[in-house]
Length: 211
Image 1: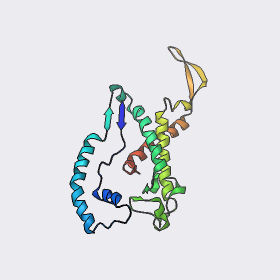
Image 2: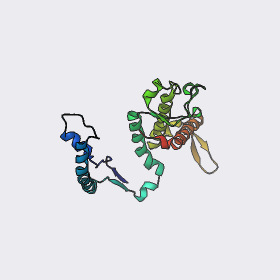
Image 3: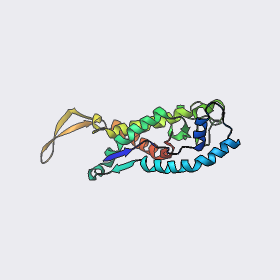
Image 4: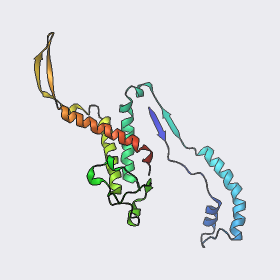
């Protein structure tokens, strides 16, 4: 697999940007005649310049998939998803609405302080009574669960910690002698349940994973 996405590019240069740079010594009023005059002159030039920059300064979205990438798709995708989730948590500037059922009781909202919208910037809780103090902590919890899940799935053997080979013992089968390995079945079950829940949260809140 090969993936290369370059930084999104803005190839448009506004006529007003050029005018502001040229008349840097004063504040520009966009309605004044001189500005409207130069806007009419510069607009065709800016359009041509935009087309040229679009041709030579293109967005690159290159993805090459090899056959073996699909042999164990969860193992292929996990190391790609994991660092992106970590970066999102580092740079995020807001949070979506998280349902109380998806977080522990200590992070749930008060019944009279639930926000019914989709997205808020983190500083709005200072002026919006509908956003409780745990609003953004709930999103942190969801991201942490996703990150933990993909950390586990990125490992070669994330279940190996629940198998104790040192305490195995020989048992006799009808045909041959085999060794029984001690397994922490309760821990293994809880481990996989948490992974399944992390994947469920990833799917449920996938469309909110933006900065």
